[in-house]
Amino acid sequence: MQGPGGKGKDAETVATTTATGAGIGAIAGGAKGAGIGAGAGGLAGLAAVLLTRGPEAQLPRGSTLDVVLEHDLTLESDQVRFTDVGTSTPITPPPSREQ
Image (tube, rainbow, N blue to C red; front, side):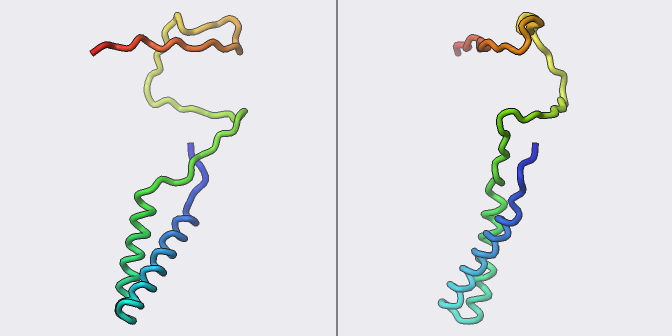
């Protein structure tokens, strides 16, 4: 499943950190400092973008999905009901193992 892209937000993050770095560098070291600060800010913004996840995908109630399984799916026959289709009952979890 894919959610909306966050490329615009990513570009904004890199641009903001680059500008901030350039400003701090200019204050600290003039034009040369601005260039160094812009580079450092750009790298910091790029790292922030690469190390964070994108926006969460939203799946509103009533949405449908097409699912492709890459491995076999095994169902226990006592867990599959062919009567009262459409009704639900809570699934009993397996007993916890003691270690």
